[in-house]
Amino acid sequence: MSTQPARGMRDFLPEEVRRRQYVMGVIAEVYERYGFEPLETPAAENIETLLGKYGEEGDKLIFKILRRGEREGTGEADLALRYDLTVPLARVVAEYRAKLPKFFKRYQVQPVWRADRPQKGRFREFYQCDVDAIGSRSMAVEAELLAAASDVFARLGFGDFVIRLNDRRVLNGLIDASGVPAELHDSALVALDKLDKAGRDGVAAELSSRGVPAQAAATLLDCFGSMSASGTNEEILAAYGRGLRGHEAGGQGLADLGQILALSASTSAAGHIRLDPSLARGLSYYTGAIMEINVPHLAGSLAGGGRYDNLIGMFLGEDVPACGISLGLERILVVMGERNMFPPSAVAAPADIMLTVWNAQRLGETLALAAVLRKAGLRVDVYPEADKIGKQFKYAASRGVPFVGVVGDDEQAKGVVAIKNLATGEQTPVPRDQVAEFVKAGR
Image: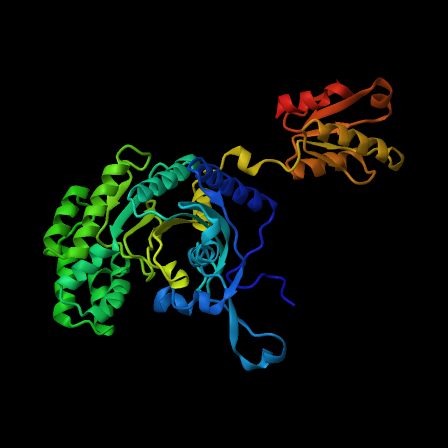
C-alpha cells in the first residue's frame, strides 16, 4: 500500500507548517488593519451552488462528490468541494444579508480543490487567501484592495511585484467594436486570457476554433497588437479610447480605470500598477475591473481578482456590488522559498529550551520545572525518558532547540539549572528562578 498522499495533494511537516502560518499571519494582520473581518465556509457546497459560476473551463475542474447511502451506485453527484472562496462568499451574503453590515468586508484563508493537472506551483488542493468588499460600487473599494494586497507583498519582502489592471467592460467593448458576435464574447475573452502565454498565433487559432469569424478575429488581434503592455498607463488609456469608438459600457469601464489609478496614487499600490491590455481573466463572473499580481521570472500570477457585481444576485435575486482579490498562498510560498525570503522567526525552533531527564524517579520534578517555565512564557520541551546525556543533547540539536536545561544531583542540591547553549557550547549554572529570563535574553 502506497503511503504517498493523493496526486496533487500534500502533507505538511512542522517546518512547512510554520512557514505557512507565518505567511497567513502576515496576510490576516494586514487585512485586519484595513477593517476586514474573518469568515469561514464549509469545504463542501451543494453542487448547484458551484456549477455555472466559473465558465466552461472552470466547471470541468470542480471535484464532485457522489451521492451516498441508497443512491451511492447511481453515479450522481449532489455535493462538490469548493472551487474557490468567492462563490461561497456570495452564497453567505445572500443567506445572511439581513445580519451583515451595509458594507461587508471579509477575508478568508481556507483550502479549495480543483481537478487540475498538477505541476510546479499548481496543486489539486491548495489554500486561497481572499479579501472582498461587498456593498459599494465606489472605485475606492478597488483602490483599498490594491493597497491592502500591496502591503501584504511588501511585508513579505517582495519589492518587485507588478499589479496588472484591466476592465472587463473595456475588453467587451473592444470585442464588440471588432465585430465579434455577442454570443461569442465569452469565448473570445477565454481566448484573449491566453494572449500573454500563447501569443497572437495561438490566440488566433483558438478564436477560430471557437467560431469567431476570421475578419472579426483579425480586427480584434490588430486592436490588441496596437496596444503595448510596456506603454505608460496614460498611453494605454488613450489607446483604449480610440479602440472603443464611443462604446458606452466600455467607456464607463475606461473612466473607472482612470479613477482607480487616481485614487491609488497616494496609497502603497502607487508605482506598482500597470494597465495591461492582455489581461482578461477567464472566470465568467467578472463585471468590471480585473487585476493580477505578478513577479518577474514566474509563470502565472501570485494573486488575482476583480469586480463581480452580478454574482451575488444569482443567489439573492438582486444585484449586490462586490470586488475582491485572492492571493495564491502556494505560489507565494514557492517563490519565497526559492528566494530565501523567510525570516528566522518563520522557521523558529519548536521550543526555546529542552529539559533533560537523568533518571525516571526525577521525571516529576522535571515536569514541574517545565510547568513553571511555560507559565513564564517559554516554549518548553521535555525529553520523555531517562537516557544518556549525550543522546539528549544530540536530540535537541536535531530539532534546532537552542538551549538544553540539565538538573542533575549537583544542580538539584545547589538550586540551579545548568543551561547549555547548543550554538556556542557554553554551559552556565543559572538559579532556578532566573532560568526564564536567561533563556529569553538569549533567544
